[in-house]
Image (cartoon, rainbow, N blue to C red; front, top):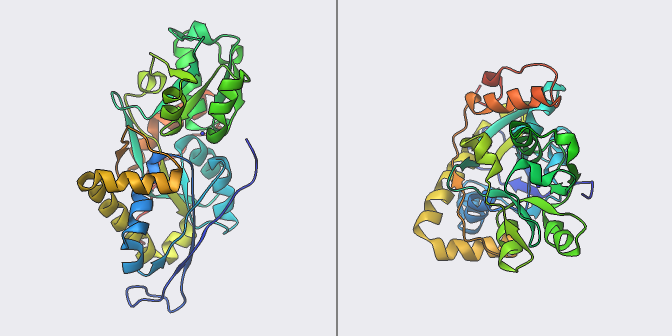
Amino acid sequence: MIARGFVAVVVTLVCLPAFASTTPAKINIGYATAADYLPAFVFKENGCFTANGIDAQFTRMPVTTNIPAAIIADTLQIGANTATLFLPAVENGLDLIAVAGGTQLLKGNETLSLVTSKSFLVKSGADVVGKRIGVPGINSVADVVFRKWLKNEGIDPAKVKIVETPFPQMKDLIKAGTIDGAIAVEPIRSSIVNEGIGQRSTIEYHSAVMPKSILAFWTASKKWADKNPQAISAFQKCLKEGIAWIGSNPDAARDIEKKYLGFNTPVRPDWDVEIKGEDFDLFVDMNLEFGVMKKRTDPKTLVWSKP
């Protein structure tokens, strides 16, 4: 959901009266190749950023596993994240906080699925034993929930060859037979299926484990967020406006999606700017089960609120 390293995009806030500081705050934003982040692209294109004093640019991050370290290094101030990466980073002492929701994965509207080669059909967990399955990052949501599904199916996850595979490379690696399948997010999933390279599994492993769950969300360092509450509030406000605008302007939204991602997806994620501590409960349990975390984190401490 892999080449190492990260790309950062510097976004400079213009001094406005709405901001308490007289020094422009610089915001670097990182995102992955997924439709989850379309509301952010929309409010960049439609001027909400500008109206709130933000001069924004976006660059795709090759892998989200690098985002926590980039935030702590102050290369990024806001970055896309997922629960299974965010939680152990916090456990290990990184000063990270969730500042806005992104998407939820709901049963019946899955935006993350197992796709396999045309010659390989998955009907149960037993079918992937000995197979090579690509995930966008080891310990990513795709990886941890997939391993939980295997365990629920009575399969030892160690019997499946789970390999780290960047989203943009999944299609080519399935086509070449290098991997047997991959956990692909929209619009990568639709691209693989529509081009006849692979097929979507009939089993939706993620919603089989969690019928409703947070998927992608936005994070920052708590120190930075506490010092820039107006910037966080503006960011949340523009996300909400972006979601509403997409609903009223689906064709124009597709044009923006294609501009930033390179292609369109026929599936619209369930966007939600709100995020709560309890959204992390099940992910804490799974991280502990698979050794991604060693101790339980209080979910109430994970979501930013104005100081």
